[in-house]
Image 1 (cartoon, helix red, strand yellow):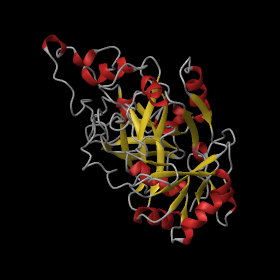
Image 2 (image 1 turned 45 degrees about the vertical axis):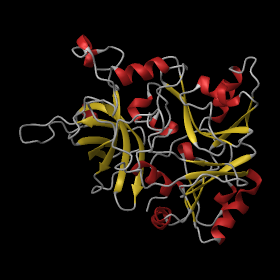
Image 3 (image 1 turned 30 degrees about the horizontal axis):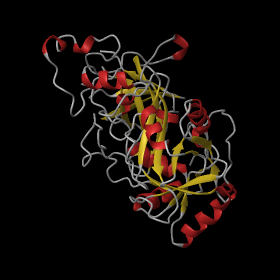
Image 4 (image 1 turned 30 degrees about the vertical axis):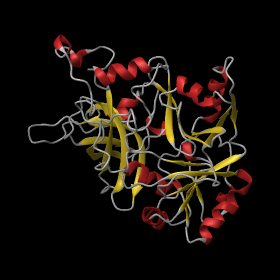
Length: 405
């Protein structure tokens, strides 16, 4: 069994190092999960416990931003992709912050407790700084409270109740009001059975909160387990699936984080244009990796569409010393996981033009491995409720220079 994550790479130190890493058998995670445990000695058993719905996951590396003041919900509504003006207390949703071209900059889980809006995010310092610059004369206050609050995850599909801690229930993959989908229906989505919520606890009580759950029979499990179930559910993360070009359509993130019928916000023009007229330039795909050679790629590995001869054999071997490749580069792996039933799996972002039935090759240290696709965003790039094209728009639909057709 390997003892370090496949995607381990030099990175800045975590803002907080969880005291739960002092547990016997704990192996630290790397990359965007640095600061918490990858596993505690038996990742397969941990994943099975989480799948059964009886486990707790330390997510104290996530950031927490609060927004207070009477204008908080209408203000956030005006800046982000989500309808928030009438968000009821203790009702979870999520939002995206986009740049003027519609590219994704921040994502956050959102829940309001009646006096404070809580944002759980992987980019807390940058998100808080940007929001603070956008306050102008409105009655809002923004604070990065990550030093005071930590998240623990539970495999439950329930909102927090009156008098309970602030709780964010992951809406994925249920298509929200005003949202749309590129992938399968909510009922047929592989994430339909994934239950996930984050409970915010005082950071200085993290160990006690976890012990209370362990006393109730829930083992503590690491991110090996939670990431495997996230990848299986096709659930995107900003620290993994998002790069400098990402628009939400490519990740099927309009399901839960975008309201198509709300007022103006930064990046809305691209959201509407791609939904109404175009096709996303790229698409998210889940890869079933060939594990027979015991090679597992790292996040960031290149994905190739192989060149085949008439017998279906790859015509180029990918010998780096000769400058060869195993085919035409068409994308990159974003997340890699070892699933206790599915084996090695990954999420990748590839060109929309890649045939959906093509067997792809993924670059690894030691050679390329083959990967079968499970379609997340179809190659046709049409959402479930895209308006019908009218007149001459249809003829040039796939050739809009902004949309990668």
